[in-house]
Length: 231
Length: 231
Image (cartoon, rainbow over all chains, first blue to last red; front, top):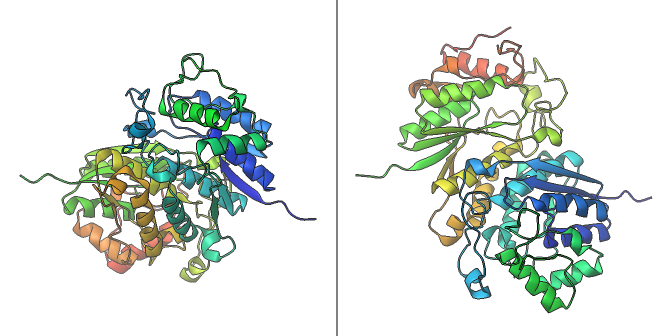
């Protein structure tokens, strides 16, 4: 009988991380889903993460509270307006103010800690370098550098018992490609949440970068989005 | 008039991080001291960090609460006994159970986030590769890999406006050398705290690895330790 391998899967509750978790499950991993309450404005995604973890059969789901608001510096955590109605060209120019400083580095560091405690050698993260909205910590060269650092950081890496890998199954997919993959893997889209600026009822605005990318992805994939938008 | 440079300085409240902060101050940096409440058993060090930050003139001091206990896995955060009375040979063999998974990676990730918000290009950390008690994330090759990753992770690094550096002024010093440097820089030893397992009054046990290394350092430096030990 083969021993099932454990993997830590970062899960925001959005389309991409849900697709990534579904991918890890299909690869046969026991998945330990990790979410973060980082004072994000779009806290509806935490409820989405919990729903998705159950739907996709995660072995465990932990939400870690971290307070990036102490440092400020992003429209997603501070008191700045989320930009709306930007076209693809505008999104492609520079790094948006919705960028959270060192976010993926902090998230992956926690994933690394949990992986070490679990004895897991695999971390899954749904980063995407195509429709990535300009975040530097979504690029392959960043992920590669993190892996190198991580294997020097840990007891498991130093002792050679574990060679950590970070899996980025979505990194070269377009948003439409991610939608198609997620559909194939059985992700229930209605459970997911992508919007940066939902209204008080948790409904997606339909106008922020994240909603616009999502809507475009579903339109291009020719698949129905289970999410209902305010506009 | 020259603009003073800002630096984020990791400050546990122990001897090493206090010496490191004092070093950064002497180098002329405005220091933003960063401590972590990570559920450590030796919480007396957080009070020490606050005292030391004031004594050494930090521009600001923030304590971030992070909960590594969710993951378990270390005698410093979980319900395991802290090893006592180990000699140098025993400390040098393998990685002790007081190792906290990915701790410095998580700490440096937060430092990176704060540095980016401050527009700071400098982080100071008091790691030490000589009397380092066997932690993998205290070695120069680990620090170098973190810097490389960090400069790929951030808006500032990608845009080329900031080339992040991590300063490790203690990395090649013996514990006695750190004691001498700290004395020269005016650190008030009585304010610092090193013990992994203090008693209810916050007094240092004198028997854990950290106390033993500290006592040996002061003895070899021929300098009086301001801390009173239980034994």
